[in-house]
Image: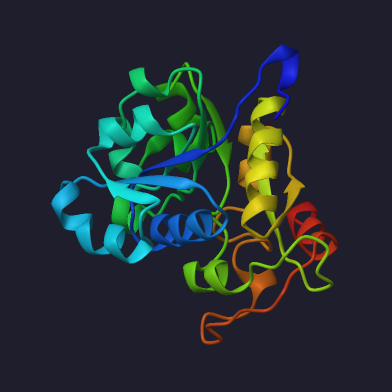
Length: 231
C-alpha cells in the first residue's frame, strides 16, 4: 500500500515477537485474513510448535531475530521490562506494532514513566530508533480481540485506537486492522496519543465490555474516539 513520502509497505508476513495472549490472538486473526506469520518468544521456537501447528501452513515458529527479519509488519508483545531485549537491527525501517502497557507490579518502577516524562511506547521507539512504532492492541482484552472482529461494513464493527509519530506507519497499521476485522481511531502522536488509552483511562478495556463477558461488546469508532478524547 502507498506510504508517506513515496514509501511503500507490501504486508504479506507478520512477525511476532512475543506470542502469548495478545500475540497469539493477533496471529490467529492474521492467518484467517490470509497473512503468513512467524511466531517467536523468549523461550525458543520449540515452545511454539503446538500454536504453529494449530494455525496451519501459513504459520511457523522461529527465533526472535528470525521473526523480526521475516516480518513485513512486526508485533512486539513482550513485558515492558524486557523491551530492550528486542533486536533493533532487523527492525530498522519496519513498522512495529507495540502492544505493551506499564504495570509497575510486574515491570518494577520506571522513573521516566512514573514522572510522566516518557510513555512506554516512546521507550520502545527510542530503543528501536530506526523503526516506525505504532501503539495498538494494548487497550483490549485478548478474548475480546478474538471475538469482536467483523468484516468491513458490518454494522457492529469495533474500532481500536492507534498512535504513532509516522503517518505512513499509521496507514499501514490501519490497513492491517481493516484486514483482520477492525476499524482504527487515530489518537495522535506516539507520546500524547498513546497515553490516552493506557491503563486507568476511559479507553482502556471499558468500551469493549467487562472481562466477565468473554465475547465482549462491539465498540464502534465513535464510542472509542469519545473514550480516547475523555482521557
